[in-house]
Length: 581
Image 1 (spheres, one colour):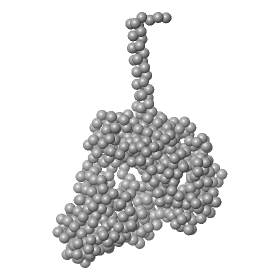
Image 2 (cartoon, rainbow, N blue to C red):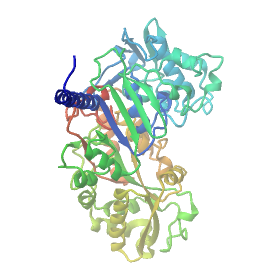
Image 3 (cartoon, helix red, strand yellow):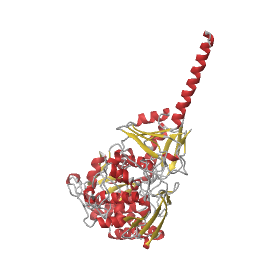
Image 4 (cartoon, helix red, strand yellow):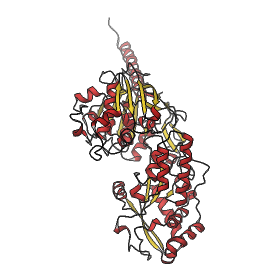
């Protein structure tokens, strides 16, 4: 059949419009099925056995799954995931997990008890300083160290701590640990595909080779390069700037609405914000509350979820045993420096605490959001007693404390203290400037010199006890008060080198709280610790800081009822629970 010129032109125009509509529809469908997230930094590892940072964990928790997870937005209730139920016996020293059937790894291998057994034994064996396996080892082996550092750890001890009884996974603890279940919800305790792991060159899981695997770095392990989990998404590719994942067709649970996920490394905040406002990114690392309120809030296509639970704790550490002469000035109470034990006098610490203006900090840094805290424990956690008053900003009380300190020498002679904060942190800098201004206003002989340093330098110096006065903080590994209280206040805690104090009464109470599952007793013990820590003024306490999240308004699944900061770093919920319109 032949067509005339006009007819042919009309047909071509109609065909062009049809193709354009199809292309737009396909592009639209592609956008709806793809989640784009932009972050400032890279992804250090994809191996659950060593993921101990937010960048890695936000990927691991979507590729892999744990035995248990947090229920909804609760920080206290746990629910089954790869386990279907569990029983606790022998006075809290035995846990028996019934495992979910019909689950497959991304490799196609079936999930069995042997995979869980291998996972936890591997974590106990390797237990590198780069991982969070120290708290698993503490629960199951009675020590946070690995076998290189603690010779009491044997193969038999590891085998007896975790083993399969048929298809039931059994943990045996040396003593009851009320935080044990919460520890199992940490992404670093996700279950790996043991057959796949062994096939690609990971530890073979045997007694003959376990010692060679002790402390072995897993950051760039074969499993990090070729992961296989049971999660709703499977690994596709990763390079220096882009990570890709796709929905796993064989997933045992509800199939995800979003089929593809792309994470992009975009170091510049302005570039991330521009991509977000254009709709080229759905979620971004958006900066501080001020950045979000000034640059994103109220803009077309932007949704805001505000007043989110704060699960971190920040303060300023006062070192009672400074291990660096170059931080001491003259090393004497002569106005030109301080002795190494300057902060060991409680009245010095009380003077510093009373000089910190929390209300002003909240106004200047947090746009008026947040409340003063009485303890280095988030109020969102069990164990925090809201009825205990927070330390007060009171320059008269500060003056009186300084006049008593060191038998009057501090007030008479003065001091020069060197304070440190993380370079680039507006909040930390402002905190130190507020403290400096108020302390120096009390006595012309008082000097506080503040100095920014790179984070890596601060960590190195602080861990060696070399900093005098330094901003510090903690985000939880698991939702239990012990993760904060032991870390900040125990003489064996992570921050002990930064503060240099040993309080035998607090140590006793901490150990009692760690060894009972009675919630009421634990809460009472934490109140006692908070009261004593407040009286002794061990830290300058920063206020709570409610979170704020910006996301594209065509994303569904992000809400106050679903947001859980312990489950997902960026969105508060896993990718599988999101959809796009």
